[in-house]
Amino acid sequence: MKKKCIPMLLVFGLLAAFPLSFQPAEAASHSAAVKEDKLPANLEKLMTVAPEHQYTLRKGSTRVEVKLLQWTLNQYGLKTAVDGVFGAATDRNVRQYQKDKGLKADGIVGIDTWVAIYAEHKKPTDPNGELPTELRNLMDIAPEHQFILREGSNRMEVLLLQWTLNQYGLKTAVDGVFGAETNRNVRQYQADKGLKVDGVVGVNTWVAIYGEYQ
Image 1 (cartoon, one colour):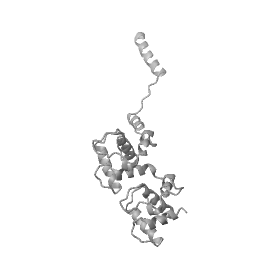
Image 2 (spheres, helix red, strand yellow):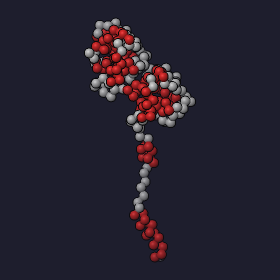
Image 3 (tube, helix red, strand yellow):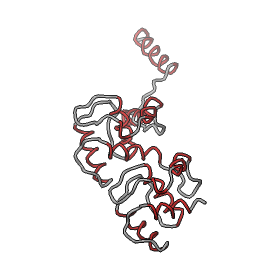
């Protein structure tokens, strides 16, 4: 009997000396799935290329630009694997994103979709704060040479317009997409300024927009 008890005592002794640590599988997988908040430097560098010069992406594309797209979709709230492969899930989420932004929901990432993607990373963190440098720099162009904006426009200049409308007191999503809300607020702004109320941001409306910063 004594001989049988000795191995058992050794086992209990080892367990006491080296306690095993068990982590629930759910907790482990959760920690691995934590979303990274800061855009990785290698993906951020891709945005030094103007949206109109970016590669057109579609289902089947396998480029590093696909990772930028996927990372952005994730941050936007559409869960997407960031693997650089434009598969069925990415295609589905691109179409949803395009639909949300009022774009043609064809799953093809062309100029308009890239402009919206870029805008996700250039959104001012505080629309009530100081005008970001990249938006202020847009006003280096004279009002008469600015792009004419209207509903459906997707350009950096839309961010400047939306920011200004916010500062003026017309609550507008600063997302770079000239949608129904922006159109409605532009018309209100034009009415307030005694301009032609057509929702089109041409020379006269740009002059008024620039005037908000003088």
